[in-house]
Image (cartoon, rainbow, N blue to C red):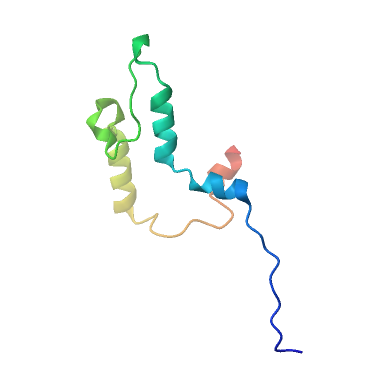
Length: 92
């Protein structure tokens, strides 16, 4: 009796299978197809691999320097506490 194989009773969910088959790119193409080109509104395609081609998406030097300073200080070369950092917990 111990060596008997039992059949698992799992069944696929067709609704979930259909949802998981849809990719981000297919959603993007659906959105682009629904944009009317004769409205005169400009669109920014956010599905680019490199957003730095648009000047408005460039990182400010202030943020870059803050990251460099944090790395060079060696104060943040570890995992954060499992309960979260104190300033963030206080804020929430």
